Length: 367
Ligand SMILES: *Cc1c(COP(=O)(O)O)cnc(C)c1O
Image (cartoon, rainbow, N blue to C red; front, side, top):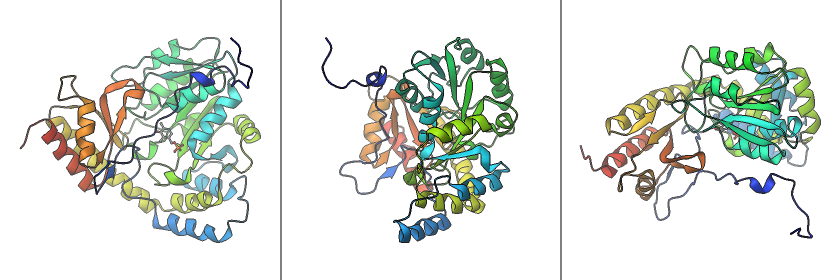
């Protein structure tokens, strides 16, 4: 039956809307939100001051090219600002990439537990998401390459991945790139790159600089603590930058975000503090939660994936309810096909200790 009213393009109604992490615990006075990988340190004080200053000039359009921000990012990482595009969060850029490079009938590959924005952006462009199996909750290059067909136009790889926290070494990223046909765009989503403390990891800058079919997306939402402002950026070959600049909103990044982003990227001491805090507590949480008999997937990001048994009274769902009653809000990841796990953002010392104690109580292993 054809309904006589406007119809969205094919694929749109196949999208399961993105469900953000919850942020409340009804009836609890003090809530620790550990569900959206936000930094417990907050943004740089300098970024807050720069943001406040822009409040005096809300009548002015922002610089549509975000030149000052692209220059600050370029100076901080040694990149050509002309090869950077800023967006309203990396979500904006991931969707623009899909819109520019996918059409009806195309395919875009991602790994089983890849970030949910990838299938959403793919379906919204009329293309088909193709899922490649993982090994031990980690992207598998052989499986990703096996999923590529003549219809594949984009391959999305979050490295490290959310919600698993795992990564693949740069050698493997290069092997993936080598195995791709040159017309497939490899999108390296490095939202958590700043947190990774591994010698064999690279965010992908070198690969972008030396090829024609790789882009890297980054965000100010995580270590920089500016999630509320919606700010991300991508680094790509000139021809991809040109295509994205043609279709992005002419003022897709707002002035307070530009100002705060410039100050944030220049405040390397703040980033260093956030990184040191994370390294310390990521290790602590992995160890302490492991001691309780729960499996924690080894993470290099700012969160851990905690696996629960299916035994009644011990399930992820029951743990989530128990923790929420104490104001400890973690992320249920059933939408990521991980119904027996919870994702926990590395929080403040207080939050981290409270979660470990609560899990101990939940499992009935009072020390
Ligand atoms: C948080 C996150 C992002 C960042 O999204 P923004 O739109 O920049 O807030 C991108 N990719 C992954 C995998 C993430 O977890």
